[in-house]
Image 1 (cartoon, rainbow, N blue to C red):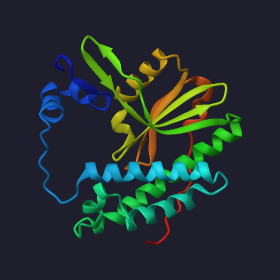
Image 2 (cartoon, rainbow, N blue to C red):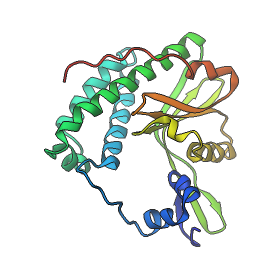
Image 3 (cartoon, rainbow, N blue to C red):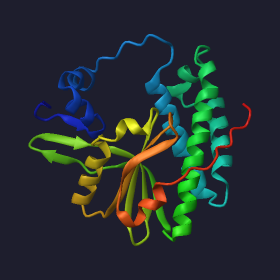
Length: 231
């Protein structure tokens, strides 16, 4: 159980529900899991999060540019000059063989997101704003503060907010996750209208989530065939 005065990150809520001892080890004692290979999944996830943040910021600045083109542009820039906290991971010779695989996963997820954008525009749901790394207001229970940061919040004009979270693994692994549901509950408590939320999985280039019925068809549909150019 979280101690009095503790800050709890809502992204770890599922860990606490699945196994309180695991939660205590990772989130309270800050113990690292043993890795039996050079591939650091946490660092890879951070790399892909950084990529999508750059891509959507670039899309906001150049709205007519193709998403695929922006992804390729930002991927090349990120790998050529990674931020300091990711440099050791990217430049590790043992990681080099994983880079093409990560790139292919990114391009497949790009196709999934392009299809969503196409369906949204055709359905007439205009995008009012897209916010990356949205900091949620703190939610207090006793002396425990629950905090979180949503990867992406899409604001649909006259409809409400769509919450998005990127995952390195399969989206299907998060069907029962409470992470985004808790984000939605906190935002709704602050007066926001929540129209849906979903997890985007790099490993399956798919999504899982929950949506109001009138917009569900925008998010649940056939993805495009991904374009994966030679590295």
